[in-house]
Length: 106
Ligand SMILES: [Zn+2]
Image (cartoon, rainbow, N blue to C red; front, side):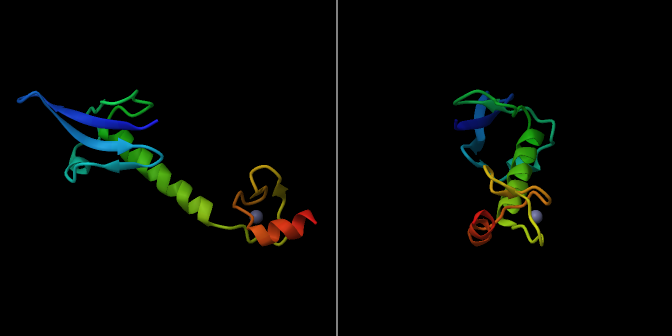
């Protein structure tokens, strides 16, 4: 579910769009990341889904980056324990590439 987040400027009543979330989350305003973490944001096009402040947006971005790194990393264990459904190794929790996957299952 995609959501655009905004910040209401109290003095003008203007709503500034600051971030957009689809599968990823990205800034729409280059100054937004400079705001204090506790600055409240409002979901404009959908429900908040756990994002209420600038700090929540930064955290969501950080977690996305972590996941990306994890997906790219591959298992190098000598004797990996293959998890059938996730294709991850039960020892290191990294992914087992297609070639090793074939070797392990045949
Ligand atoms: Zn492993």
